Length: 582
Image 1 (tube, rainbow, N blue to C red):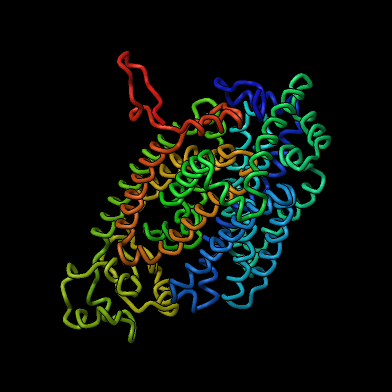
Image 2 (spheres, rainbow, N blue to C red):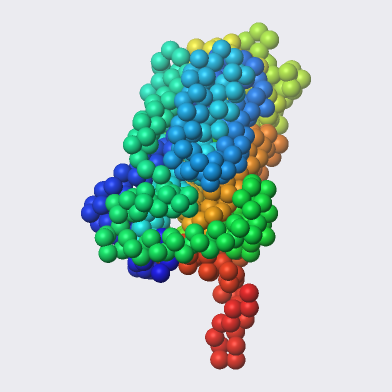
């Protein structure tokens, strides 16, 4: 008998989740209420992509300084690092429910601060508060759902958190589109996040603490009462006995190493089970970020503009499609994660991600090479003092158009006014300013400053969508599932917190460097770099991450006690049978 349930789940399918929750709707109520944290997580990470386009229009300094744009985006990630680190301690000390309530308060404060921000630095402060909430919610919501779920459907229920994350991102793009023509555009976009935070706060007040955390704190009667509402009557005693054995073993461990934070950290890294769990948990979290996903979610409208779609509204509408595909992929994960397993989904996902990134690199490279040429005469006569300073000497010589194209013009920090006759014909390379944009638009032409008109733009959107399709069911949701079930109960909050911190640190590195990388390497080089990181991530997932499908928490612990090796690295005896040498 083991902690987390008595039923084997090797053949669990998506229908089992719905069958169980239909008989016991209380389970779904717990999962969906806690999962609103995932919705907030997704909304606040997704909404900034559209809001940033309008923040740049309101504040010239933001428009002119890419580092300030990156800071506005990435400060939420910096806050999430702190939120995840502190959240791990709060989870173990005060419980999962209290952590979610605190996260809701932080979400609400951040939303209000951003909505009324008079200057960019105030937006940054609001983003930091939101980050605190995102960091806590990112590791607490799946943990709460995992500990309140029967093992046979645990993967599918934790996937609801992933679905709500991607659903939150999709919702953020809908909100962005809804407020495009509303006065205060980005203020509404950022402020709406306060509403679901209030809803979750009210719902969580009526819900109980995690039964496993309660038992750990010697609140046995309360723990039993919750388990009786989750499990069939004939399974409750088995669950209580499993909890008792698990907690007694951990209390014996605690008596040896102590209960302070320092002692707990020392005990975690001195425990081979926790070390192996962290190796797997941190690997999947870091790999999730270095495939480049959050650059797509944070900057997808910008990436769409890089592909040659200049309109803010068009860019956000196309980004809505990628976000919708992300949400759809999360549903696929719910259907298959308990049937085919965590490890298999991640490995298949990584192969697809690498393929799409390489193709995207080729597409953006061809788009840059075949960008429209510069018309020297038109650049010189477009308007008084309008010629791009870097191109002016060539324009004065009436240089052949083959020497410069739109992409080189944009890299010189100038703007490109496309031809009014044909979309891919030579155009004017002019000064990058609102005045030039208005002049270009007044002539019925399109002004480009982030990307060039390209015949390859459609392909970029297609493979960006395919990238999301292969990412979402595997690397999108599974890392959070793995981290909710791979650590012993005593170290579950701490282990999940450490892994979440690694996720957010990686997120910060990737999101803070993305715009700088695209300026230095171009979109093509940046996607190729992510393909390289993804290949490294695939290798370490194959090497370090065991399959936990259908296993009870205690069985996962026993698996890690032995140590995991891929089948190719296991020594075989003379009869051809595998021998575990760990």
